[in-house]
Image (cartoon, rainbow, N blue to C red; front, side):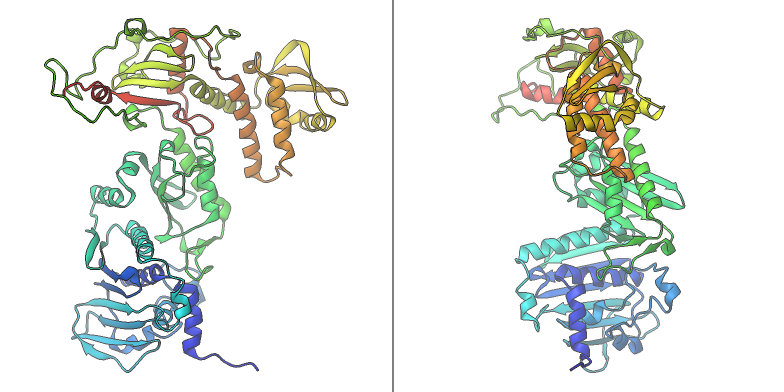
Amino acid sequence: MIRILPDVLVNQIAAGEVVERPAAVVKELVENSLDAGARSIEIEVEQGGSALIRIRDDGRGISRDELPLALTRHATSKIAELDDLERVATLGFRGEALPSILSVSRLKLVSRSAEAAHAWEIGGAGDVEGAARPAAHPQGTSIEVRDLFFNTPARRKFLKSEATEFRQIQQAVSRLALSRFDVGWALRHNKRRVYEFVPAAGEEGRLARLREICGEEFLAQSVAMDESRLGMRLHGWVGLPSFARTQADLQYLYVNGRLVRDRLMGFALRRAFADVMHSTHYPAYVLYLEIDPAAVDVNVHPQKTEVRFRDATRVHDLLFAAVHQLLRRLRPEPEHHHQVRLHSESAAPAAVPGFSAPGTVPRPIPAAAALRLDLREPAPRYEPAPAFDAQPAEPAAVPATDRPLGTALAQVLGIYILAQNEQGLVLIDAHAGHERVVYERLKRQLAEGAVPAQRLLVPEALNLHEDEADALEARREELLRYGFELDRSGPGSVLIRALPPLLARSDVATLLRELVADEAQRDSISHFGEALDAQQRILADVACKAAIKANRRLSLPEMDALLRDMEATELSNQCNHGRPTWVQITLAELDRLFLRGR
């Protein structure tokens, strides 16, 4: 038998979509406050929100006649017709939140509009009880939600611990506070103050709130951006690649002030970091996209956390291009780069006369021999010609400020370059740094048409399985663009007739086998993103094989030439796999290591 469900049950079903946990209640109620023009919002919760959630704002308020409507399903002041729904500019618009919350809690709503002589109150437990009553309250609205899920005990059992539920509320308030710097916020839990933000009037105030929510390290390891193109604006802060996270816990993405989780936008941002971040890490960012409301559909998810764009390609292109170009403009800057933290013994002896205090003017560091460091290396297996110019400018001809990676002093263990700059010592991973230089050079060559090829006097035979030879033959034209000229000479034999010059003395057979294996794992590269990924993987493999290997003996001019190349190369703070190419050891850290000034 088909029957019409009672309103209370309908609202409880809707609550299952909207009111997932106490944090969802806070989000819905605070969004109503923002839509009402509030400039100050106070949030008070007890027992992780299950016992009490109280939201108080100084917004426009609700008149006496409209209070019952506010608790009626699908009653809203934010849309009136289809055109309004297609250009939603408010955070809420469905009119489901308040009746859904009321259906699973004991709710009290008190509000006073600007023209009213006093406030009015209405509420109930599961449903509206009685008419509006006079109350004392300044202009604005207070909503009190008690005993959440008191009448749906099965839902209450799914709540986590008090600490976990409050952590979710704190995160929800943090996200909202980052969306509106012009609003003052206060958050209290069990009578204890957690957050209190004054309205941010200028850049200093915004940075203070960003520091409070995202942390001092994010603020120090991020760069501001503001790009307008294609009729959209993208602005905010992007964490440097060196601030990559092991989880996606510092990603705030807003569309017209609404925090969203959008796969397309996340994909574009992850691709922007692809060249500088390890595949297991995540970028950090706080970004705001401003777009014509008619170009985005926000009515695709009950909790309004997902959106759909009319022209998704334009949005992807803006996010990818703006962040990718921002990262490419970065150059080595010791004061903004990751620094090695050196820790000495906890016991601090008395200061010794003559020792300098941390932070004094850098002193010249003697040559490696004078330091009596054991920098000897095993004899290299081969001495290929350097892939970079080994004739750097004379130190005196280049100001120190133009050489952030400093001047090379020595090679350590055949792997690292030790250099001195104004801040102290720099350790450079020669292979990783050279790999980035080569990779960017190959990308430029490919963008200009093709990677140059060097013909071999005697073709090199490569013996493979027949299916591997088939795969290479199928990609022959593509590999020509990367500087490889291959000919099939038998069922399982391929002749290498030309190579990129950088690979003249490298293990080309292994590289080609890896390319074949990579091809076997992919069904197709028809999608532009997959095709670009395949191109980047090939160039990255070539760069890795061509870069300086461990135990390759470098002269000081060669080391300095590599440092200058890195300084002039985009994205040179990380190798192609996202690992750092160099680290700074400041003079203050060196002084602490040797207890100078103590």
